[in-house]
Image 1 (tube, rainbow, N blue to C red):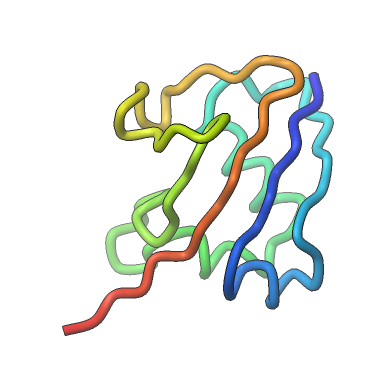
Image 2 (cartoon, rainbow, N blue to C red; image 1 turned 30 degrees about the vertical axis):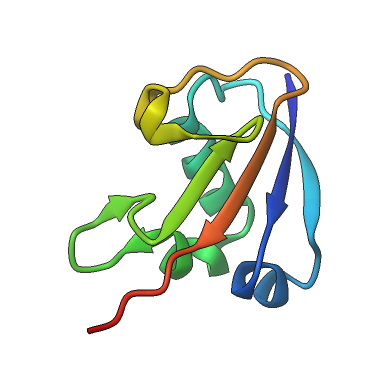
Length: 94
């Protein structure tokens, strides 16, 4: 299965590219995809995972084919061949 992963904002700048195709035999959900991205590009882990909460996705808005995963099935959202995933960094402040 292959999906396209697009990066926006600081993630794009950090990675040096706006997108890449990821062939992922074991990626059937967003959570599994996020783990595969962490393995493929370990430098992104601190940007994708809240270090205090050890929470995948709390630092990143995740869209699948234009829909935010919270309106789908969260990190359990199932993927299919050809899906487009967009990762947008979330800025926290207070």
